[in-house]
Length: 79
Image (cartoon, rainbow, N blue to C red):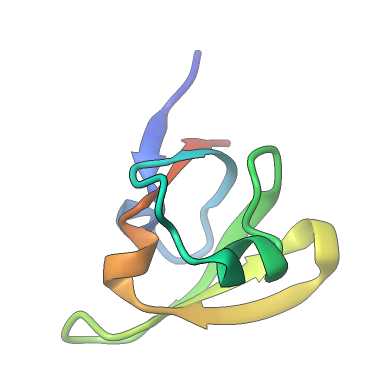
């Protein structure tokens, strides 16, 4: 069973696999940072008041902070 959800909707500590993107014009920086389909990520921190989200890209062991609006464009399969 697949639980598709955008990255910004995940709660702190939840893991997911990136499936696709809502917008084909997502900046190339996301691919360079490791946000590619098939990559496993975990939410580490969520700032209050629609602030940035800290994401652990598990496949590359990196922590990356992205805007909530950008996270909303990333579609994941919740694990």
